[in-house]
Image (tube, rainbow, N blue to C red; front, top):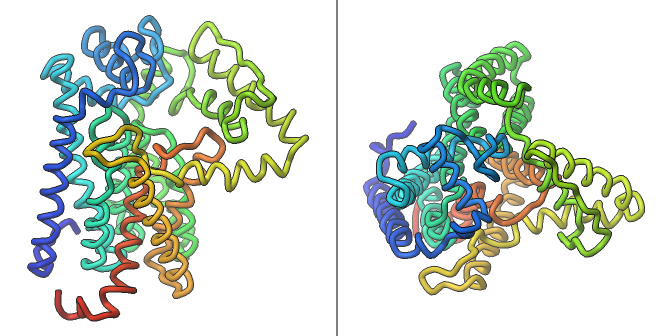
Length: 416
């Protein structure tokens, strides 16, 4: 499953070289740019990265999970990133822990590259998988993301691992794989709640592969029980603090409200949202304001809003790389050109695979579409498509292998 012992020598050498180089460049980026790439200020705590860091500090100092306000426990964020960061802060100190966490992210990036190879090999073949890894190596957003303290790197690693285990679970129909999948699903949700919708992709592929109702029920029960066991400490904490069952977070209000503004232009039909006495009250006010806007303005301009909630938001999600600050002298335009090249190549290969009725590819495509649909109701941006980009690199690698390399005979089927 995870072994590459049977791979050709050149596959091993190529993969090893890519992973080592990827790790070294990520590590260099962390040490060179880490302290330059904060999105917020430690004086104002006005962005996600510094708020996560403050949450970790508060966990270490007072044992309380906070986010917007230090005097109020939060359910605005999922707890995994603050707790992971707090672990490093506890060992290495307030700022030493941040550096250590970034180095940890560089290590996770290297592990993610290996998972990209494993997924590509499982769905297509080893040669295409290596090509996908090589393309990913050239993606500047990977190195930028390692330098920031956000959920992207940790979430991407767990998502890729979940996809890989899911491929085996779907094919071999073993309870052990679905149990592992349940653990990974829960851990991913403890980082980003959007992963709660992931089983929809599994259900669709079950239907396509004609699973029996009995098998569906069996695997569903095992997965849900495992998921619940991992999530239960979070549920218990939320009930003890807020006296209500909160399965994930109560933080969708602002992204939902922002998403109701076409092209995010709040100068048109602006409706103010009142701040509440608590985070939860403010969140509900934002949801109510967003619903009011849709009932009021979407009815008047239905075509405009339909286009925005389909094509418009999808373009916002996929049209550019998550690359907000320049590193290694590479500007955003160059990064965006390569990003768009991968999108076009991945889309072209997807169309070809559909025409050829490639069944192995279907699950990857379903996951891509699912993530697009998950974010459409809310504020979408390039940051949210980053964790799913490895699938596009895998598809692009297979496209290059099929259309260029294999057809011109650079790599024959029986040699590397």
